[in-house]
Image (cartoon, rainbow, N blue to C red):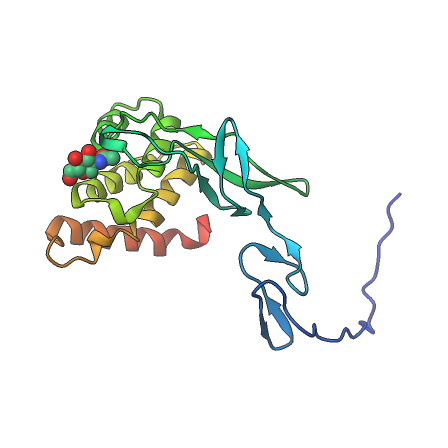
Length: 208
Ligand SMILES: *[C@@H]1O[C@H](CO)[C@@H](O)[C@H](O)[C@H]1NC(C)=O
């Protein structure tokens, strides 16, 4: 049974929250909550709890955010990179991690770039590039340039999950310390940085 409701003209006046919980900031009587809380006083959980999924441990993560496993690749070019990525999502009110996507630990960003050019398995490549750039402070100039090229190509994909991983990769690359390091900041990197920044400003509405 449906019936139309009319908005009450005399909106009940609600006293402003006395205090914002969990680190929320009170601004003009409204609480601005930290990413992992919501509600009038920031008292409602807005995160997936730390959890083991598929044998891997993921830390507490706000809804909509990606999470990387605490377990890392043991050796080789990917040593120390997370073994897998997942995302905290809201399924009809229940917050849960999605099925984790695993990194093949032997892959390097240059391998991925080659495979992207040959259009091999974009879903796996997009996740792998995202995981390999998840610790931006560890990236070399070569890594950043390769990853930016990978992300640019994957953004043309038809698949929403591939595009989402590519956007996450770009936002991680913007935090690469090599981009701020003037010694290493050669012409290639400066133009990579410029195209990353431009990409974000052009797509921030579409992908936010
Ligand atoms: C990052 O770049 C270095 C060389 O600058 C390379 O040895 C390493 O394999 C690259 N890492 C990844 C994950 O591609």
